[in-house]
Length: 75
Image (cartoon, rainbow, N blue to C red; front, side, top):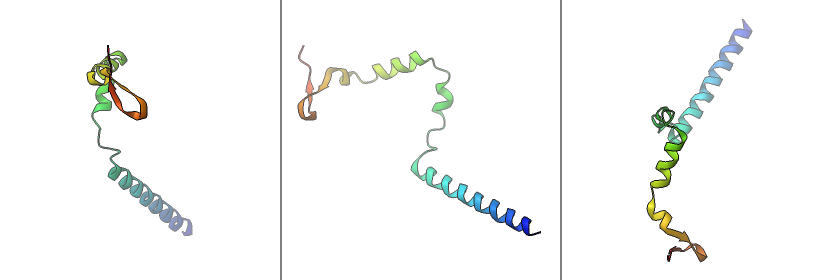
């Protein structure tokens, strides 16, 4: 009978630890984006990279210069 009390205490303690960890990560935003991983599998790797590369055209026209200042390319 003593082992039963010990097992109940261990299981309740473990459940409390998991609950605290879940609440901490939920507040940090770990579970915010739950749709894009399911949709990401539908795309090929090339399609995702093409969208990322063509997404910011201003970024291609600029380069990081001296002292981390952004300078326009002169072509």
